[in-house]
Image 1: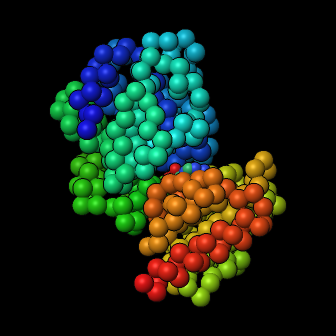
Image 2: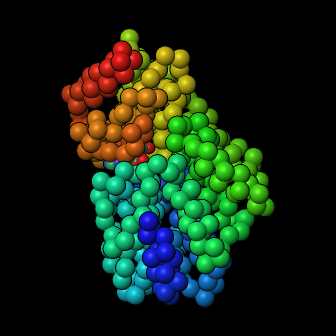
Length: 316
Ligand code: AMP
């Protein structure tokens, strides 16, 4: 564990710039904002920046700072929740004085001058809480920090549904909700969808193909997304939808993109799917991965591979 070294670097730096991944989810924003607020609470004189491009519909949770190029010259840069360098939002992350990676994805790309990666953790937000605990006063803690970290944990555990929810996760969540924020209001906000998103969910159920073994998949054409006027993060909210269906063991959602052909979201209740994702320009967690498909041939290939994994799993 590099926790002491991380705390030393935070203590020494006058400027700290925190990056997260592109297309941020609540864990990316929660761990980024939570760490920033925690540092700022302990060291009000330090300059702490949140770096990254658009936060989409999550601007109610966190907003980014304008970071001047010059700020990087002497800065400590920390990336959170970002497994590999191409996925870091704002590629200036590499132009600071020292780079630390804090993450909970499998450590396939061990970048940075120092890294702390715990794939068993539910979320990077859980790790930031652990870091604050370990810091024993060298980092701050308050309701702002707690709310952001709680949002991250709720997001990445699917509100404590997924199997990454450990006893420790629940203990951390219990500590967080003791702070002065409204977890129910936060959960309601995170659970909220627009009517257009609800229509997309019904499209998903209507067009879902489920194999005999329980491998489900659906293609969402660009025209459907455009007709409903949905942004990519609004589409992303439908990723968990097929998992609610009885008999579905693992699933793939193929979302046609304006620029690259299809974005693939893979989810599973048992079979390990991240190796499949790696075979299609993707990666991620054992039960939650993302990939890309160039065309309908590759979609068919992924469907067949997913079905094989599920078949193997259910017959084992
Ligand atoms: P998503 O389906 O986009 O929500 O992604 C699920 C998980 O897979 C996340 O933890 C991502 O970090 C990871 N992931 C998604 N897309 C990719 C990719 N192209 N390459 C590597 N990892 C990815």
